[in-house]
Amino acid sequence: MYVKNGTGILKRVLVSRPEYLKPAPINEIAKKWKDTTMNVEKMLQEHLIFTEAFKREGVEVEFLEADQDRPNAVFARDFGGCVKEGYILGNFKLPLRYKEHTDYEAKMEALGIKKIAECKKGLFEGGDFAFLNETTIAVGMADRSNQEGVEEIREQLMPYGYQVFGVPVKAAYLHLDMCFNLVDDHIAVAYTEGMPDEFRKILKKMEIDLVSIPEEAIFAHGCNLQSLGGHRVMSLSANHKVNEELDRRGMKVIELNISEILKAGGGPHCMTFPLERI
Image (cartoon, rainbow, N blue to C red; front, side, top):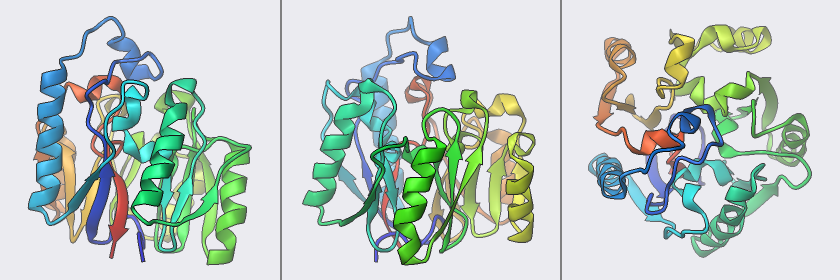
């Protein structure tokens, strides 16, 4: 078994260091920093803080070596998704990220993780992939995944017993994990006003408690948290209110002092591809 859901005990992850990361103007956050030279030494130190936090919590960390021809590979989440039976290979929208498709596929083969589905005709990036429980998967449709991609994934995962549905949100939000993130079995952080009514009804039916953030917090990575399971979650030190709300709900919040990597448009969730959850 690989990944049973989005909130079980995280045992192993795949990441990539930000040695060549630049604020390419391909999302609303990075556009603000497009004329900035990012501090590589600081980014590498932040990524070390990030990976060491995983290790302290008992999570094994696998690395895809950095490559100047795929600078955004640090956002490992985006190449696909992983379920119990194997992984889904996505289809990137932007040429900047095409090489990630090939290299992450090769890395997964080297790790012995089976590919059970692939998006070829439509678009699908892993930042839009979200378990709601062990058999229900939401796929955001903002800027990088589309209806055709959702339908491809739904058709290929149906034989395994998964229900997959699309969640349309504003393109400016980039990925679903920027505006919605399940951090514990029945707790999510979300910009609730930006969620479609049908999705909110599903969340209510599933008794998921929503920690609401304002729209502007999306662009400060207020939702981009990484669940470790066991009522533990990685968050940014700057997420004061969210962290307080999660602490009040009985969660252990592991705060990361990261700021430089964020300028490229991704946070802890974006940087993490789960390989094993139990």
